Structures are given as C-alpha cells and as structure tokens.
Image 1 (cartoon, rainbow, N blue to C red):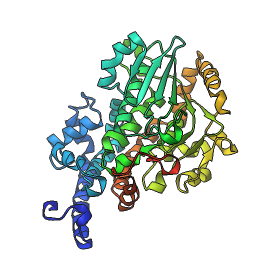
Image 2: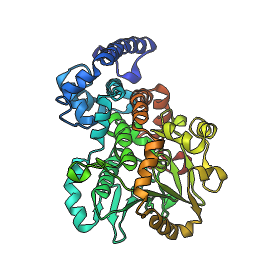
Image 3: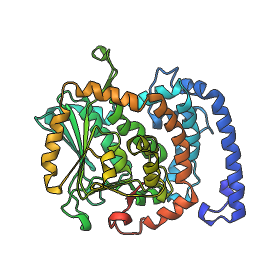
Image 4: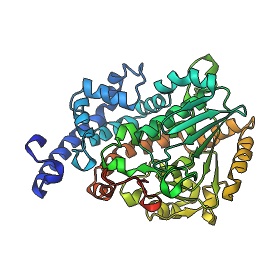
Amino acid sequence: MTAALPEPPARDAGQRAEIDAAKDAARALRAAFLDTYADAVYDRLTRGRALSPRIGELLDAAATELPGLVPDAARLAAERSRPQAAKEGHEIDQGVFLRAVLRSPVAGPHLLDAMLRPTPRALALQEEFTRTGVVRMESVHLERRDDGVARLTLCREDRLNAEDARQVDDMETAVDLALLDPAVRVGLLRGGEMSHPRYRGRRVFSAGIDLKALSSGDIPLAGFLLRRELGYLHKLVRGVRADGPGHWHTPYVDKPWLAAVDGFAIGGGTQVLLVCDHVLAAADAYLSLPAAKEGIIPGVANFRFTRHVGPRAARQVILGGRRIRASEPDARLLVDEVVEPEEMDAAVERALARLDGDAVLANRRMLNLAEEPPDAFRAYMAEFALQQALRIYGQDVIDKVGRFGADRPGPPGDDATAGHG
C-alpha cells in the first residue's frame, strides 16, 4: 500500500489518515495474536528456550520464521537509509512483538536473562583485557589498574559524550569486560576531557542521546533504545550472566559501581546515575532529564527516579524539565557527595576505596533486589518497548529533533546540545 503513496513527509492529510488506519488495523491483529500465542512463538524461535538469542537475533528469527509479524531485514535496511521523518515506522511492529514477549512470565524472564549474557565482542576481547588491563574503543576507554578498579572513561570528546548506537555497543562491551575480570573489584564511570570548543580541556559526564543521530534515523529501537536498558544498564544493576559449577550460588557476576559527574549529566547521563551504588558530583555540575521536552521517554528513569526523589520532584524533572544543580538540597537525593571541581580526583579515590569492602557486594545485591524486583522491571520494559517505539515516530518528536539535522554543525553544548533525552 505504501508503494503507491508519496514519501511520508509529502503525504497530504487524507493519505496520512488512510495509511495510519491500515497500520492500526494490522497492528491490532498482531497484538491480538501475540496476546494469545506469545509463549508459543517464543518457544518456536528459541527451540523451547534451548537457545538464548538477544533482542536483535530474536527479531531476525521472528522475521524469518513468521513473515509479517515483524519487519524483515530488507525492510529495516530500507528504513535505515532514511531520516526519521521519512520512515514508515516499521519498528513499532517490533515494539508490539517485544511488549508481548516481555509481558510473558515465561518468555520475558528468559529474554532478560539472554540480554545479561556477555556479548560476543566482549568475549573476543576478554583475553586481551585480562592480559593488558587496557581496551580502547571509539567512545569508551577501559583500564584496570593494580588497585582492582576498572575505570570506564567516556571519550566522545567532540560531542560531549552524546549517546548513539556505537557508544551503547562500546559501553556494554566495557561493562562486560569489567564484570568478567576477576581482578576487578569496583567499577568507575567518568567522562573524559572534551575537545568541543565550549568545553575544551574540561571533563563532561554525558549529554544524553544524540539528537542529531535520532533526526537522521540512526537511533534504532532494538539496537539502541532497548539494548541500552536491557544491556549495559541492567548489567550494572544485576551483573553479567555466567554459567558453570562455580556459580551455583548466583548465576550473575556483579560488582559495585561509582559514577563521577563532571560538568553535567543530561538525559541518559542522569539515567546512568540511577543504577550506580555511589554518585559523586562536582559542585558546579547539574543533572536533568529533558526527554519529555523532546517528546520521548527517558529510558527506565520513570521507573527508578521516583524512589530517589519522590513523586512530585520526579514529575517536575521528567514532565517539567527541571534541572537539579549539584549545589541545591534536592541533589542529595541523587548524589552521595558534592565536592569542589578541583577536589574531584581525590574524592573519587576515597569513594572507590569505600566500595571495595568484603560485604559491599552481597549487600548491594540485596538492596537492588528489594528496590528493583526483576518482575517489576520486566513489566516496565514490556510497556516501554511499545511506548518508546510510538514516541520516536510521533510527529512532535520528528518536528523537535529536526532542528538537529545532519546539515547542522556539531553540538554547541548546554541546552542546545545535540544530546538530551
């Protein structure tokens, strides 16, 4: 049907209404089918859960074995070549499918567990990291020192550590390597020094999602928005899945994490803080979650933020775009320590030493279990899979992120930065 119509931006109101009605009818049928058969479909795709495919692999298998249920590789490839405003929104069908799978008390936990397994890329780099203690990737540098600390430095210095699919892949690889290495006892997340003109030579934690990449169609639902939450962020909470007789007491290898915030933690940067065990911030730093301003959902922040700051402040930040500066009282609900910028290095080392205690690991595991029960997290992610898919194709989002089109120069920083979300 779409082949007979102009490209999405050129369609008139009648054409848009016609195609929207057709898509809605097809999605209603898919949703009804999956409401009944999600477990049967999942068992077929995973050979009765004998296989543990990650989200991308699961979607590929569904497209191959059950044509029409989700978009196939050719259709997605055609979509990837287009800016967000010119796409048909086929990823929404992936959201319909993944919502049904994650809702299931049988299939959902199995998929979450599959996403906690180390990535093939991390396993390929494991021997190198164990031997050298160093892995340098495009957006993350990972270093293990003799003190047992894995130092993950975000190093997209030209774009204020704005997140894209490359950064998510690098981060999950680095988190996997740090968790799998028995010589690592504590992990540190910190932004590196920037080369961006407005912040040259200064550390910045994160500017959030790269809105230029979203505008140009390079922020995929499965490969970024869902992989980020179910991959490295969830691994910071639960750990990485490790099989074998040595793991009879727990199937996961987890470690405490410290986040050190220089400059700002915008959007996804603040989301990272919510899964860390200790957060240190420079006195001139600030935190924000402006995703609603851009029209999208700030990851799992809607699930986690209220327990940190309470319902009223959560709405002020998420719905109203309120910034929280490290120097104000409410920041202490999100940040454990605030120090002057020149004292950050020393404060980081002191905090790392405190996290390196014999009982820290067991207690943080029990705290995370109490604060974020796996089934509650799974229920949130099920609805997030569809709602975020709908949001990234909302006309308001396309209009707002359009100003960050690929023809613009690099991110100028602060509220006008290409990173938010």
